[in-house]
Image (tube, rainbow, N blue to C red; front, side, top):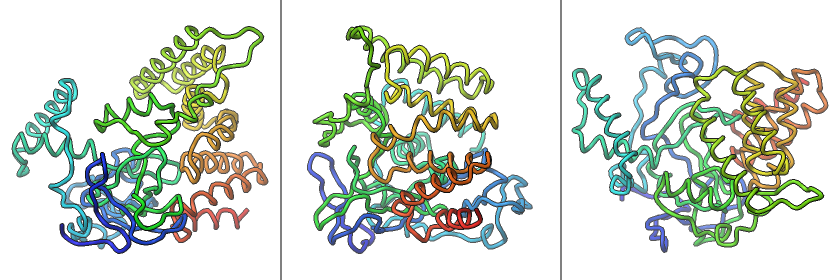
Length: 395
């Protein structure tokens, strides 16, 4: 162990291995700790829009004179070198779990192909670790990498935070991880007392228990046994069916669940190769099909509604995006935990869309609701909050 973090300690969590717990009380919205990234990379689609070092999004970035590909705010961002060990106070990078022994043949073959490609293209120019070490590194990133997101949950980049990797999963999280530039910040979303474990959610919590645990087993090799997974208290409302004069047979519901899961998988697989019009048609067709059985608040309906909203925004169809976005607000607020960024991001998107459509009152109301959540999740001094305050004040 290389150090400590005030108010937090490493411990052996029963049934989970190592973990973190608090040693003093924390209130909702209070910062437990901040962790600089051990290593990070900007998303390719953000190159030229965000600084490669600090991830600040702005115009007028300067292109690197050597590689001609990277962009930076200024010379300071281009030349500064971080002190790596600042992100390893509680856990060394070499101690991060890899789960290579748990990977199935398909996942191992995919990793092998990535490693072979890395050797083929970079081994002549870089000092690349050997094959076995790279397999471990790839698996460590897959299990412990964090997606750095902006205020609307768009992907900015990927990073590794050793100390944050100590935090275990729960479908009833006590903290949330957000990002300030490339640093991760861990804030309480529940009041915590000394001895309480620090718990985050590794996955999207919108989905019912079986879906969540399938995702956890597939990506992280464990099954959650939190109180929500034991009680399945929200599953009934998450899988709500449409009210009809005739009752819907269980077989019909089960078949529609299988159809919904298949459609979601297919959408993910093809969304980068289909045109926006084709994607929107797929969303609308699946919503019509599922809508014969599922209520509008059913999570599979919500999933495709969210995708439809995103496609409309990409097509600059503000009215269409608003129409789909408004269908998400009430069920999202009911199904997600308090202070969920999934909820605040919808309020943000709708707020900006409303303002663009000259619906100023609705826009300001939505932005204020987003800010109420973000002040807890990001902290009141975060630059996202400053930007929101300024936007609201200008209107």
